[in-house]
Image (tube, rainbow over all chains, first blue to last red; front, side, top):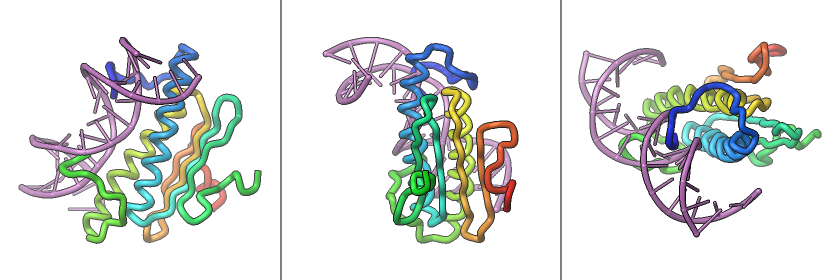
Length: 70
Length: 70
DNA sequence: GCAGCTATCTATAAAAG
DNA sequence: TCTTTTATAGATAGCTG
């Protein structure tokens, strides 16, 4: 996507890595939600930022996984 | 994607739902892996098929989350 | 149910504001 | 740094085997 092929390796530039993390994290959670809804299946997703912040998605009412216990 | 907009609702047709599950499950796991590699973050993903089969991805050596304990 | 094909829709890298 | 725009790569719906 975007203006160049994606090399599957850690992005060196800190700024670019942060921006990519923000965008892809959002996209991944969206995709996880779509899969669970479209196919009626249970999906759980947890993502830890480099700073240790938690991002998650969980199909079902709460929408939470780890944040329930952490 | 594909030849029509995606309606965010459960796919009624069983065959189509199964095919979509297979394709999107693969795509989601791929995206999860890319995020973890590109941004150097920890990601955990679990997906349960309608029949209860487990599919998962976990950044790190094992690549496993639940299958370690289930 | 998986594999390949093609048209089309999405996600997103980079640039711009 | 967040938002918006733009250009392009990537994902995938519907088909065919």
